[in-house]
Image 1 (cartoon, helix red, strand yellow):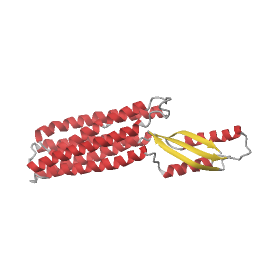
Image 2 (cartoon, one colour; image 1 turned 60 degrees about the vertical axis):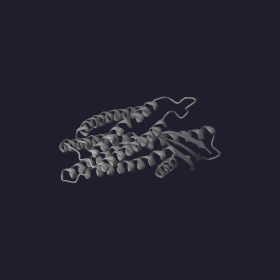
Image 3 (cartoon, one colour; image 1 turned 135 degrees about the vertical axis):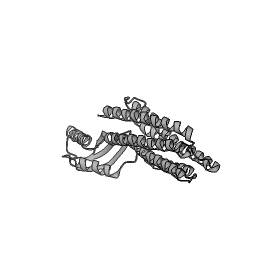
Image 4 (cartoon, helix red, strand yellow; image 1 turned 30 degrees about the horizontal axis):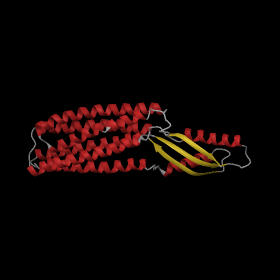
Length: 285
């Protein structure tokens, strides 16, 4: 199942990269002629969002490799490292967009060709929403937190495009400062995205996992005949797969063969009933 999930993840990345690059190019052309800083901030963010797909693409490709004597757990952790790079790119785009908005605010420049600029902002919203829908859908189906976070990021990007559109409407109605103020609002939204995305990614790097998942592992293992107690459960994400280590107590008078049979039954039961679980190590006490 895992190689198929990885292929779907790569396809989602390729699709979203193409859509976002087309969106950013169309917006960039209009930015040159209109001078809209709100649209510029949105375009910068869309370009950054497009290129955040590259480290994630590399991470999914690396996860196809088998474990080695040096990387005994395989290369799935590359997905979390890609998440950190995505977070840094988002922060960089926020700084650039904020600086550009500040300069426009100080110089009080009024954007031109408002109709084209509004159309480009709308294109930005539609492109990001299409990408967000697909990334979130595939991310949930394959259990990739990095892809899911990137999809949620794209969805908020669509809202920033609407903020740029609102700023241009403000200029149209006679409020020239509405455009750079929209750029600053977009900058604040990007920083918020970086904060929320960063928390999720760093939690994965620290091997955090939902306590309800641990409880489900315990309940599932306890249903296996012959297991008297389950304790010392450890679980962590490696990429978009969960690895688990548990201790089970069995009757001390059982043979080694029977104890091993029970542990294997526990392992197979957990793998088939816990979503995204790919590896279980069972210690028999």
